[in-house]
Each structure stands twice: as structure tokens, then as C-alpha cells.
Image (tube, rainbow over all chains, first blue to last red):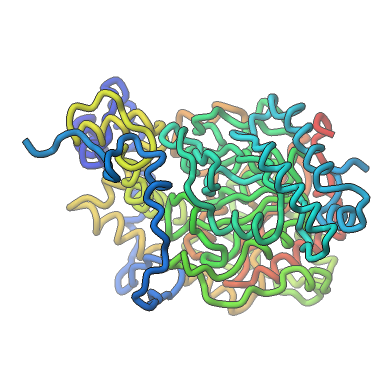
Amino acid sequence: MSLSPEQVQQVAHLARLELKPEKTALYAQQLSNILAMVDQLTAVDTTGVMPMAHPLELTQRLRPDVVSEPNRREAYQAHAPAIEAGLFLVPKVIE
Amino acid sequence: MSLHQLSLTAMAQGLATRQFSSRELTQHYLARIAQFDGQLNSFVTVTPEIALAQADAADARLAAGGAGLLTGIPIAQKDIFCTEGVRTACGSKMLDKFVAPYDATIVRKLHADSGMVMLGKVNMDEFAMGSSNETSFYGPVKNPWDLSRVPGGSSGGSVACVAAGLAPVATATDTGGSIRQPAAFTNLTGIKPTYGRVSRYGMIAFASSLDQAGVVARSTEDAALILQAMSGFDALDSTSIERPVDDLVSGLGKSIKGLKIGLPKEYFADGMSAGVRACVEAAIAQLKALGAVVSEISLPNAPLSVPTYYVVAPAEASSNLARMDGVRFGHRSAEAKNLEELYKKSRGEGFGSEVQRRIMIGTYVLSHGYYDAYYLQAQKVRNLIYQDFKRAYETVDVILAPTTTGTAFKFGDNSDDPVAMYLNDIYTIAANLAGIPAMSLPCGFSEGLPVGFQLMGNYFDEARLLNVAHQYQQATAFHTQSPKEFV
């Protein structure tokens, strides 16, 4: 499987990454090489094999529905790029 | 003997009997960092004020009684672990100004609970993605054994500072070999425990089903002491295991007579250099001399671990790194005119090339039309790799293999070819995919550069792995060698 520079731009868009135009061709070549290496998986017979998402058979623990975390909003917002009145600011999204 | 040549046990004894104070020990290391780290670039942030305050607190605890074995002993923290009030950059421009608002669980356990002293935060590949430390925003770390060579990665700062005696021990993390490969390149002992044994809370996520914290040290005994203090259930990590921690230290002295060691034939086929092969074969002979029974086994799907990993790990990384969006923390572009531009430009500016490549591979294999062919298929092959190990441990106690194909390579040797770089982890990745514990320890030198070998254990069998490694180190002296420019 090889990727064209246009496909790289499309994937970058899905990943919300702005790529420098001069890097697109190199990325296309490198990502194609990686996918070529990965392609050997397609030859493996996995009929009847369960996909394994995780190394351990775990079930999610439950806990009582009580507040266990202190409110540390100020500490967590101290390093935010832009805040106002306890809210994170972003460029205007609704005209 | 200088302070930085002492084992952790000898250090603890010196502190307990007041031969030296924690402040003196800490100052000794801070002075060595100031003297030598300009050559190595192993520390990203040195924290002398915190270190001396923790040392004074440790000295008070030692004087008052109630000190633990590790109280007052310094340690370096990989910059992937959140440290409250201290920058936690994870090797990335994205987090260059990120001051963590809380401590990782292992940071709390090692410092608040055990009374260890934090010397600082050490360098690493960006978001732990790399095998050479060349992807760090803070520049590459040099290998103390040869400054023209890489220390390995991603835990390059951790191994360089310990190998050079700038810290007695360091924390590290391993997603595909990031503890074991750098340990092998710098003559250290490094262990990645069973997935879920050490809390991942506050450890910046790369690939959540593979990431596991561990330690790099100058001996198995040192590694066991730290791993003991780091391990244990943590309700803050949903994949932490509710299971008591074995005693990792008291069984180190047991004989390994009759121990069954498996040698997977797939790991001993072509691929490793003659120098590495000679050292690993000598290690096998030494373990036989200690009474181990060695047999050939097969892990038929192990050769598929690299392609499997390069689907699973980037897929998880692309999801985990979505949180780096320039909104709540981390780098925000000054150029953005709208929200989409804010995301794209912040991430385009904040992430380096290797991280961008992996995010794109991950996005691609998870995207509509490719999910079944890549991601689902990789998860199935992962299951086959896991089954191989399960079968093997029905007949053997531990599996022995090389850690790396060669010794530390030169800067730039693999950095233009991602696939060549990825193949560096060919022997280490399978343990992460299966979730089993694995370690690397020194077994000789090839043309003056360290060689390591790997021991892989069954689930939760850290105590046995460490026992085997310790017995090997009682009979050999490779691990006692240090790079001579840093004595």
C-alpha cells in the first residue's frame, strides 16, 4: 500500500495536523514504507482468532457514586493558554 | 570507593549509620551533574532546590527513626512522569511549558512514601517514540560509553545518567523496548514488569495497552529494590492489577539449579551481529554452569511483532495524543484564526516529525475502510503472539533472547529511515504485545561497546526473573564496568 502526497494531506486533515507543504512528499514516502512493512500482516491466517485489545483479562472496577476528587480547577487551569472566568477560551466558533 | 559507585544497599547502610548524610549524597550527585551533563544532555530539568529539601527531610527521618530502606537515596525521573510544580515536557515542544499540576503515582510512591530524593527530570524521545533519543525536542542524549553513539531510546536520559554515575538509579518506561534496548546499549540492568503491575497514573500515555513503567539500574539488586517500591495496585489506574506485590528482594539469593530456560529459535536466527551472538551464547553457557537446563523452543509468530506493533502502537498514540489540542494545556499556535486552525497549527508546530508520522499511521489504520485490514488484523496477530508465549511457559520457566541486534549505533545512522529504526526493537516488542515482564542485563562487550541479553518471564513472575538475573550477576562482573571518562 502506498500513499500519495494528496492522501497524506487527507490523513493529516483527519488527524488535525498542519503539515509544511515541503514535507508532504517525504512523509508520503516514509509512510508508504511503514505501510509496506506492516502489509506482511495481511498474509497471516487469522480465521477464528479473537482480536486482542489488551494483554490482561480485566473487567472495569466499580466504585460508589460519591465525590472522591477535590475541585482543583484553578491548579488545572494555571497552565492553560487562555482562560476567562473559569472557562477555556478558543477562537469564536458560532457566528 | 566514591559515593556514586556504591550499590543502593551500601548507600542505605551508609545513610543509616550516618557515615554520610542524604544532603552530602545529594550534593555529590548534583556536583557530578554540573560537571558532566554538558557532555551527555541527559537531564532536561535539574531540580536542586527540591532535591536538597527532600534530602533534608530524609536526614530528619533517618535521625528520628522510621526511615525506609530507600529514604535519602537520590533518583532521576524520566520526564514522562508528572511531577507537581515541575515542568513535565515528555521530550516535546508541545509540553515545553507544561508544569504538571499533580504527581504520578510512582512519583508519590518513590518520594512521598519511600523518601527518595529527586535529582531532576531526564531526557527522552518525544512522547517516548524513538529508539535513539534523537527525536527529543531537547536534543539527543549521548552514550557515555562513546559520545558519538546513541544511548538508545526512548529512555536515553535515564540510562545515560545512571551509566555515567550522575544518578544512582532512574525510572524509565517501556512500550516496545524503551527500557531494555537503552539498558543494553549502556551496560545497565533494566526491567519492564508485567503490564498492570506498576501504575500508569500520571505517566503521559503513548500506547495505553503496551506502556509500562520500570527502572534502570547498575545491578539487579538495585533494580529489585526500586521496582518493589514502585509496584502495587492503584485505584487511579483502571488497568492496575489488584494483586499483592511479591517480595522481589529476599528471593534473589536462591539457587537456579534446575531452572528451565527456553531459547526461541526465531530469536537466534540471522539478524544479530557476531559480537552480540558471542556474548549472548557466553551468557547461556554461564547460566548452564549455574545449573539451568536450556532447551530450544519456538515462538512462531514472534517475527510478526514489529508489523503488529506498528499498527497497534500508532493507533493508540493517535487517540491518546488527540488531547494535545492547544486548548487546555500545551503549545498553542499564535497564528490561528478559527478553531480548526487552532488544532491544526498547534499540533503542526508542537509535534516533531516522528510523532507526526505515528499519528498519521495511527489515523490511517483506524480510518474507515482500513480498520479491518490493519487494526483488527493486527489485534488478531497480537493474540497469536500472546498464545505463543502462553504455550511456551507450559514447558519453560523463563525465555532467554538477545536484547538488540547490535551495539549502540552512531547518531544519524537510522534517523532518515523510520523502518530501519523500528527494526531496532525486533527482539523486545513481543513482550509488550503479550504484556509479560522482561528485562535486559549486561553480558559482555563487543568492540568496547556493551551488549545485553534479555530474560522474559511469565505473567507476574518478576521475582523469578530478578532471581535469575541476580544469580548471573553474582557469577559475572560485566555489570560492574563503568565508562572510564565518567569515573
